[in-house]
Image (cartoon, rainbow, N blue to C red; front, side, top):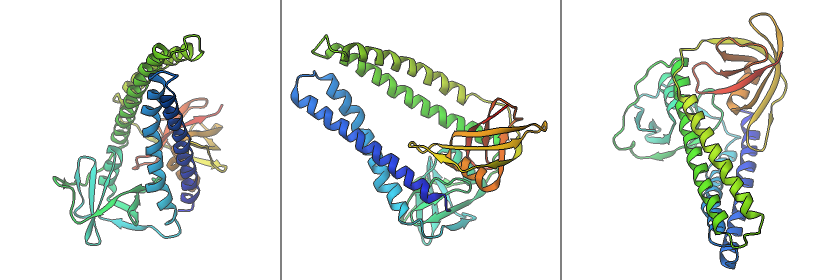
Length: 316
């Protein structure tokens, strides 16, 4: 998987930079708390928000990207059939070499695994077909307690879209909760800050208002993406694309040209997409769109049978 190495390099850089920058803000919060001249709310705000961010992204580097980066010169092993695979909630246990590979999967990927019954495994890491983001599991002597067999069943585009929408909706709700807490902290800072003439006071009030608006927006987005939709159909398009670019946050932009079903040649851009979607487009020269694409509009694209989705924009 040649694309995996540069992807891991970018993810390691992104996670490491985020962990380091948020760690500096934690140090700043400690300094503000020790000095005692800036009230209680401001250092509490930094410590409560930046400490888990720094630890989480640091964990991603130490337990995920860096160890996987050391294995990229070795081949993945295809494990198919998956007889005896069991599941308990989001935790999946796969019998492998006399032991059990245990890992967590969100609902869309569990549905894909139930339909395809295949994994690519490299040490404790694995990927599903069509999905280039590696995930880490752990080898155990027994499956997770209370597990039940993962029944083999086909998966339709509508079901995958619905599961993906619910997952995104839960992420939006989590974001709404975080921004609401940030709004409360910002308001606390505005009230608690000792220097009432400082620019910190009005700026934190503005930040609180923006966080409230963001909370409302995220809540609406959660409802919109999780609402049911009719069963979609795939439209396959041939794409001639250039090289993909990856920004600091790991989001991929892929630009190319395609011919719509009405015969019109337009530009197409998969901007802010999942790296798996961009990799599939670049590798196959094909773009699968849910529904009928139109010039000048945005559509949802994906890979049939895989939990890979992302927006694409068609030019005029």
